Each structure stands twice: as C-alpha cells, then as structure tokens.
Length: 214
Image (cartoon, rainbow, N blue to C red; front, side):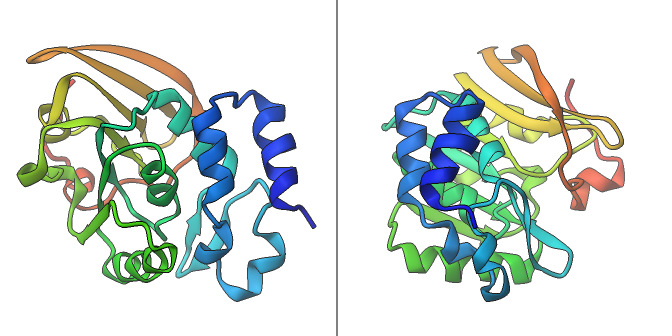
C-alpha cells in the first residue's frame, strides 16, 4: 500500500514535480477526505479512483502537474471548471488567495461541498452550474483551470481571464491534449501544447456545439 511519503517522493518528485509550493500543497491536502471508504487502502496510489456514478478523483500526478504548469501565486484568484469531488480545488487553494469552482453535476457539487467542509479551508467557493459560462460575477481571474475537456476552449472563459493570466485545459474529444494559454492582450493569446491527456468530456453547453473561441 502506497503512503503519502511514497506519493510525494516517487510519484511526484520522481516524475519531475519540483515546485516547492505544489509539493507542500500535495502533502498538506489529505486525499483520503475525498475518497470513498472502500478505496481508502488505495488513497495514495497514482491513479484515478472511483467516487461513484462513473465519476473519479484525479490521479495525484496530474493534479500536481497542472498546478505546477499554472505557476500560481499567493495573491491570485483562480476559477476551476469541474469541481468533481473537490480534491483539485483543495490543492489549488493552498497556493492562491481564492478559488471559485463550478460543477455541472448537482450531486457532485453537493459532494464537493461536503468534502471541502472537512478541510476547514475557507478560501474556496463552489456552485452548481455550467462552467462553460465561467463565473462572470467574480471575473476577471488570474488563472482558469478546466478538469473536463471541451472540443475547444469556450470564449466566455477566455474573456474572463485577466491580461497576463493563464488558462489550462484538456482540449479535444478522442485525441485530447493539455493546452496552456497565456492572455497577452484583450483578445490575444499565446498557446502551448503540453502533453496528451485523457479527461472526461465537458458537458452542458460545450457538448451542444456552442460557439467557441479559437
């Protein structure tokens, strides 16, 4: 059975995660709070685990990798699209000032609230809704993170990013890639492809052939 120390040393440091803040956040956040009882013996294994109804908690490495690629700062405000069970939001909350997270599946949004309440972290706000539209009332954001894959990045999310901000998302349906956008102007972006990934598809408006920004 893997321990938290194994996770940090072998799954994260051993695979190139070197940001001290990210490693500390991964150590601080108790993944066991987000995993059902029947999988507690697998909490620190580097793989997704079922959390019910065909949903999963992300593997520790990808959570750490995405946080590291965003280069998050303590004074920043972050939007997460796809709260899931709340684990990723909890990790990101240790690195920034405030996290806003949207979850389209109502029972998952409720589960995330329950799980996050156990952490006593007070800088995470969640809501049930379609993340395609972002969270306009709290925009603009320093960084935006998607944990479900749209066919292309929704324009409302790009609009809600500060100039100088970063957006990280898995993009595509069959062949997904992890894409990092830098907002360099009002409607100008630099794009960097990081690695092939496999995430659940983004549902809601993103799944209905909505209008997407390039």
